[in-house]
Length: 447
Image (cartoon, rainbow, N blue to C red; front, top):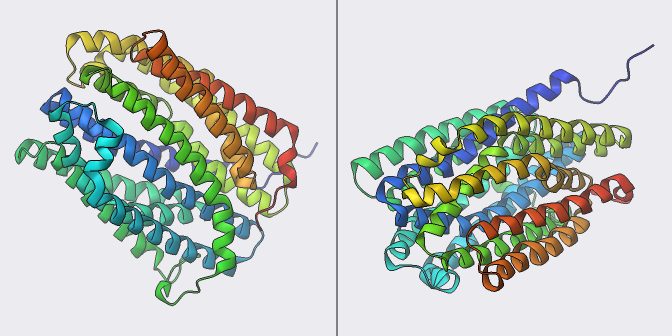
């Protein structure tokens, strides 16, 4: 009996996915390094970095949404063998990334103190000072990060994930080395962590740009300054990017509102929430890498009109996310007390954080893949409006509404923030699973 043939071989999948998992770890390590290394300055410094990260993640989501839109369009054109349109789409993604990120930095930088006051007005003064110190260099880094995100998305579309992994490794070396010099050596605290992140993002942007300028690059961006600026291609990218950006923005606006609720619980609660947030990121490192691969794999299958393989790879990659998450969560569950102790929390905060971290691992294994892997399949085929509806409804009903109800009405502490989030994962995961199984995404088109 002849073995069934699929669009990607097992070797293709390994070559794409393994570097993306490593890249996912390295990307998370940058923020994790800032939080851990700045913990030497105390809980107030950890809290300041955490609050900026909650704002920063909202803005980064916008960059990532447009990068995802570009990756979907490029992947589908590659699957359809329209290489010139794929190359032009890559250039137009960079135009969008530069325009959006420069505008964001120009608007927010002079207003940053007001933004902090509006969102986190009740925080203690030392936390507020650290927040401002870290925020300035992070804001300056956004244009470099946006272009880097776009370039790496293009590279993943042409299956060159090893390259993005190596550039991410370089960025981590610069970031961690810069943290060591500026936080410990120069005594700059959170400001030093922010400057180190800025330097790493500049380096990543410049290296990726240099690589993508190579004449032999399939999707090279040589002649970027000459265009073409294509309203049609920009509209294709925005068709994915805008709903994805709105979905991500709604998600992170909700998180910021919840972060404001956490801030009202005190500095210790802010620090505990930051630690659990990092733990959540650790658990989902392999899943995030596989999710990125989903965009390229499903996008190219959809571009070729291969619906059968879209279904096949959705099942396969979702199963891989479950398996890899279990593998990483089991040892982390065992060593949770040792990991939490690295963050420099008070003893009472450590005791409170441990059970919250362990429950987070259990939820990552059981709920997270449905809530965050399946929507990547829907994005890759162009079914973004449903994602916007599902995530928006779930976020405001469960995560925001649930958190405020548990804290304000029931008098619960920081653990309530995470209970509400798990309800959000459960609802959105159920909606995405129904959509994938129903097959209604088959009527959607991107190109």
